[in-house]
Image 1 (tube, one colour):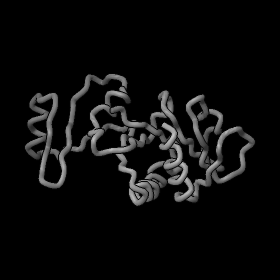
Image 2 (cartoon, one colour; image 1 turned 45 degrees about the vertical axis):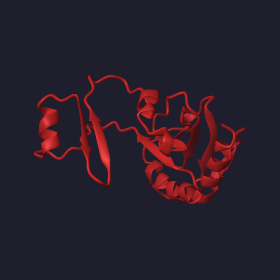
Image 3 (cartoon, one colour; image 1 turned 90 degrees about the horizontal axis):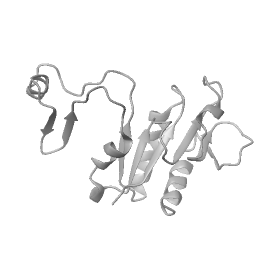
Image 4 (tube, one colour; image 1 turned 60 degrees about the horizontal axis):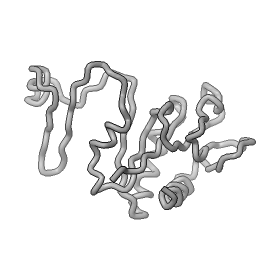
Amino acid sequence: MNLPLLAISAWSGTGKTTLLQLVIPLLKDRGIRTGLIKHTHHQMDIDTPGKDSYLLRKAGADQVIVASNQRWALMCETEDQPLDLPMLASRMDSSKLDLVLVEGFKDESVPKIVLWRQGVKGGVGGLLDEHVIAIATDEYLEIDLPLLDINQPEQIADFIVQWLKTV
């Protein structure tokens, strides 16, 4: 089963993570099991230097799973290659999820809710493409897309629940 992907896209500093922290529990309350894929432009390491998993990965293991009774994580080494969102999403356990939210990845060809705030660098037009299904904003925009209030996470969660019924 292919999980529906929904990207939350915006310029840096708009509040993608903050909004997702509010929307994810609201979706959970509505019975929607969500996964999340977050894009980062920064050097990333979830291992703790000096720990066994870190040492073994640095020794040359291309993939490492760290597991406990509470959670597990898979770390994969890559050759500084372009990110492949469908491949990343395919690593999610579709039997336990209803939706994968994607933070960032604004150039991907997946449905998107664009976040736009007054005063944030870059124009809203630079975020729009044929995959945008709504704009969550703090101002009125003359645009032929549903407008959501970026400061009303309940409204955004309700929109996502309704959208999921159509995919």
